[in-house]
Each structure stands twice: as C-alpha cells, then as structure tokens.
Image 1 (cartoon, rainbow, N blue to C red):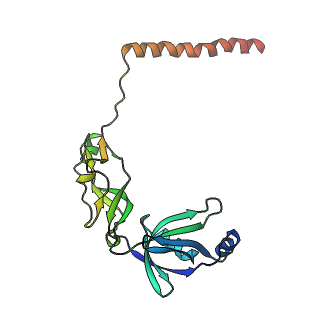
Image 2 (image 1 turned 30 degrees about the vertical axis):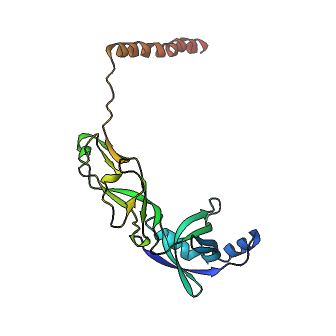
Image 3 (image 1 turned 45 degrees about the vertical axis):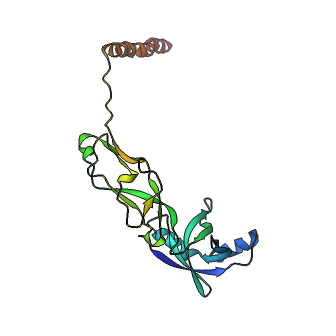
Length: 220
C-alpha cells in the first residue's frame, strides 16, 4: 500500500509572477490545496524536501499528510508542473481528501511469473499499462500485480480475472483485456515466382555499374 508521507507547508500570501520567482529563488515551491470539502488554500513547500519525496516514490500516486499551521490535512499529489527547460518544479496541486473518502487513481500494472506461452515463442503484450481503481486512501496500492504464469499463446487476461488487493476495485469493465500472449510472427517463405523475380532483378541493378566502368577507364 502507498505510504503517507509528512510534508510541512507554509501559508503563501503573495501572488504574481515576480513573487513566485522570488519564492522559487528562496528554495520553495508554490502550491495549492483544494478538495470537495476544503477551501482553496495557497501554500508553499520546501523544494528539496518535496523533490526527495518524488525521487523516492515507487508510484505516481503519492499520499501526503500536509502540516498546515496547527492542523494536518491528508492529500493526494494531483499534479506536478515541471520546468522542462531549466529543470526544477514550478507548481504543485494537492487534492485534499479524507481517510473515509473513496478516491480514484491510476495504478501501474506489473507482471509476475513467466508466461508458459513464452516457451512456444509467444510474447506477452500489455494493453493497459495502468488501471484506474477505486479505494480508500489507506488501501491505495503502489501497483497492481498480474500473475501471467498460466498465460498461453493466443490467450489474454481480463480486468475481471485479476486478483486485486483488499479494498481495491477496478473502474474498467470486467471483460476489458489488460494483457495477452500474442503468437510468434513467422515470415512467409517466398513463392517460386517471387524468388525468380528477385533473382532477375539483382543482375539488372548491377548492370549500370558495370557499364560505367569502361567509361571511367576511357577518361584515364
């Protein structure tokens, strides 16, 4: 399950481009906290602390306990805006949630075991690399593990056939294919007519080069 990480915030009262630049230069990241039962609040967090949280996270779904003054607020890191030119983080959106409030999240799919179809030249192809699930914050998994051991060539695993962690439910329909073991691709042997045509084409391509050789010798 996803861990809940502590993150201290400070109130952010100044707005505007100049104020935000000063904030980032001082080592902080501007952020906003919002939710269905929470008023929109502008805050700032320490850049080094949050960057470390991102780097050490095994999933894109990060739960944090925001220290806001004398209180705390559970939140999901909803969006992180990166500066792709200069590097660093420009802004963070925190979605405030409650421990008894069901959340929706995209969770990565990971395979376990070796598909039996691989022994016959098959290839496991993942159709959905993430699955949207519903659960309480305490049950949010870092990934969904799919056992492919019994997967044969030409067979597939559907949403409804996956064993989900306790308290986790998929949003997709049960008959949606998540992954499959595709048949090996076999290149067709050329027909006699195609082989004969290819043999005739090869000398024809070499002819211009052969004709050019005497001309080059004549110039000498």
